[in-house]
Image (cartoon, rainbow, N blue to C red; front, side, top):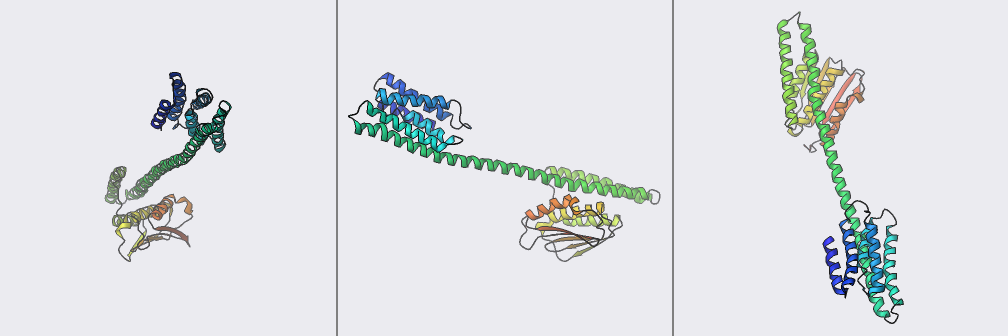
Length: 351
């Protein structure tokens, strides 16, 4: 825009200026247009625009009425058309006022040379007014596209920010899965070891060794999570859940109706881990039934207790994650039983 403004302005000065002082006056209008063009990309309307508009308008008045320079409208046409579409309100009114001003100043030339009506109407009214209308209309269209581009950029920035927030929430959820689960298991095993100290020293020692190994494994998983390397293994989680339930004195039964789709194993492993943690933490279960199918997993226990569903925040987060991957996670509490069911309808696993 700046290059075009200067190039066209210089060409018009070369064509229309007959003396050096006429060239100086016309150059003032082109300079005002140049300065306004440089500032156009700024937010809002800079303070320098009003002086530029006044100078460019004065050059048109002087050029039309004194210099006999019909191209002197160029500066005011450029400045006015650039900034009329950027006004916060009354944009169309401002554009109309600009066109009327250019036409009236050109028509005022008739007062000085009433015999050259056709020439004056052509070069001082029709051409300047037509050029101003075309340039202003083009700038209105350009401003619309410019605003669309800005909105698209803002949308992309918001999407990027949302992606960052979602990734942080995912990381926090995974960290909760790892460390929250481990802490509850450690608490359970230490309590068991304390009970065994006076009964079975060797078994108590083995429980403490398992605690140490569990803590070491959690440290390793946390490091893997930090490097986005962690992948839950459903068979390992299943075995871990069985061991934990049996250590807590809970009878556990596992039924395999079919092999689980490999694409769903990671999410289903997270569901099983979170459910196991909730049962050990909130329930008073004596029986747990885990059922695996080709499309999902269900975990049923008989120790629902009085814990409200709204307090199980980990399952709420997992429900959203499962839904994002084409599945559904459902929890039910009825007659003292608590059911957690996660499934991916056939063909809808989006892993």
